[in-house]
Structure formats: structure tokens, C-alpha cells
View 1 (cartoon, one colour):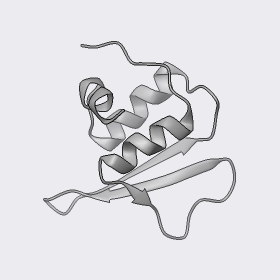
View 2 (cartoon, one colour; view 1 turned 45 degrees about the vertical axis):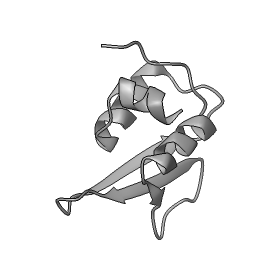
View 3 (cartoon, rainbow, N blue to C red; view 1 turned 90 degrees about the horizontal axis):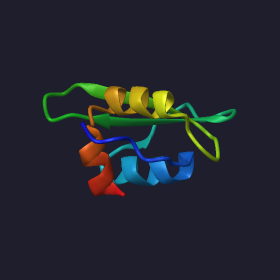
Length: 78
């Protein structure tokens, strides 16, 4: 397993948008961003990204799990 890179929330949001995520409707207030994507099987994936200069590795790992992405896929999206 590849080690997770250190990212800001802005960098992560850009990568998630490249993976097909969009801003979730009726969300986005406060210091967190909500992004969603509908998978080909119809499943809706919702990820919440806290707005920070540097995301803790554990937080980044949890976001990737919710997004259904691996660290290698994230590196390709960056």
C-alpha cells in the first residue's frame, strides 16, 4: 500500500472533482465541503472534506474510503 501524500483540502477537492464528484445540493455551509458522486451501480457516495491547510493522514484515509478510492488512484488524480 502506498503512503498517503500530505494534502490541503483544496488539493483534495480538485482531485475528487477529477474523479467525478460534484458539490452536494443543499450543503456546504460552515467549514466543511460536501461532495457527491453516483456510481455506475446507482450507489451515491457522499464525502465530507474539512477545509484545512493540511489534512491529517487519518482524515484523508477515511475520506478516500468513503469516496471508494485507493491511495494510488488519488496519486493519479493529483
